[in-house]
Figure: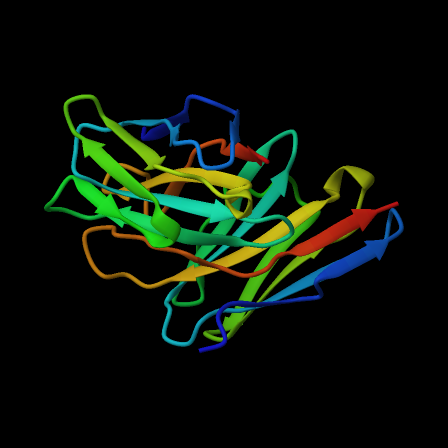
Amino acid sequence: DAGVIQSPRHEVTEMGQEVTLRCKPISGHDYLFWYRQTMMRGLELLIYFNNNVPIDDSGMPEDRFSAKMPNASFSTLKIQPSEPRDSAVYFCASSFDRGSSYNEQFFGPGTRLTVL
Amino acid sequence: AQSVTQLDSQVPVFEEAPVELRCNYSSSVSVYLFWYVQYPNQGLQLLLKYLSGSTLVKGINGFEAEFNKSQTSFHLRKPSVHISDTAEYFCAVSGANTGGFKTIFGAGTRLFVKA
């Protein structure tokens, strides 16, 4: 398996522009997670899905952020409009439920977003 | 709510010296414990995990961790580090007390291995 795939790996955009980050989870995994990592705040969970349904989006910072999972093999995280404080590395991770809340996650390589 | 505390934000150590990265968790129920490693400009990858059974868990790259239920700790150790072990290490926990199907991550410990 190729692992979790994220695109693009790097994104540089100007303030006010729309940004779309993409993720393909590992085949057969039924959970997908979006994280944001910054020096100041560390690793933050933004949202996670189970069987394509959003379960917990309490970590999404504000309405400018939205995430979708139209099918089991694809998810997007969109920021509109983007702001300089959104600059961070965004990770996607996937896992599958083996019972008893055992949650070993597999991370993608991340997308480094820079908003100028 | 579940929480994970990594007691050291940075640990500098000389090559071939032993190292211990400390982790404490809070839980009154059974948990699963993990250590993840993040090399520069990469995603996190699993180093080792504790599910049940033996309290001493061995992982990749010569790392091991010991689960101590009475002290709610899961410290990571390596007897002799290499320059290539320079990375950030995250302790994490999942289980019935993490608020849904979540993994709770610690703040990370940055390990610097010096020649």
